[in-house]
Image (cartoon, rainbow, N blue to C red):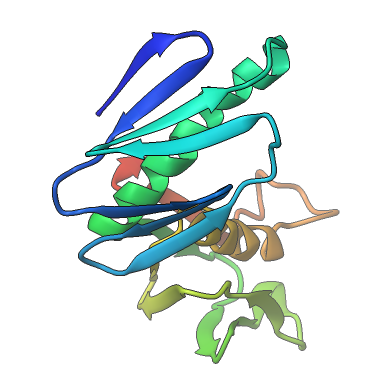
Length: 184
């Protein structure tokens, strides 16, 4: 999908079913599942589109600016992957002491009875992300890898256990796979 020409520019080959728009530092990607837009803030980088190739060029000779090229290329590739196939994180609800219940309430995930607590723990759902609870499985999906991964991380962090022995109290909601790749 990508290849490197020289150290001051990288290119991203675009699939046939993708429309990519460049407006200064704003990149808009449209695919079969929807569209994503992202504005980058680096002043030394320019984006140009030629046919089915996006060229990301560095206008500076500093190594720091050159290092940003691969990061920006990765962001664009993640956007393309999101609008063509979507991003999905799978999570597992684990409890041994107190049976917890997980519910979706609008833009929040409510975790009731976590370690016997009276008040529910609440985690936010980012825009464009859907969360589905099916028994002990939680599925977080959307188009933006940033939003999906941050939502899954928020759910995992809100059930983090503090001040108790983690060898005994292993209750929580844990990420089991990131976009089809199992987590070790």
